[in-house]
Image 1 (cartoon, rainbow, N blue to C red):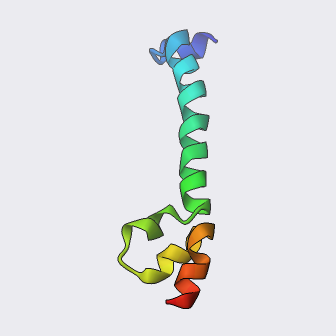
Image 2: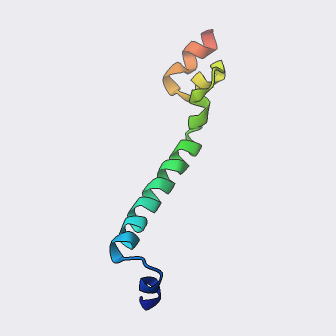
Length: 60
């Protein structure tokens, strides 16, 4: 613990990193797993990612 204090990190900074890091990582993973980037495209195939749009895309 003394080496952490020598680096200038307080307990609050470590606690903040321990909370924000996993939350941010989970958000990035969820965005990647759900193919979130495809929702920013103009490709009609992006609509197939949403389960409610599969029939409409198929009929289109």
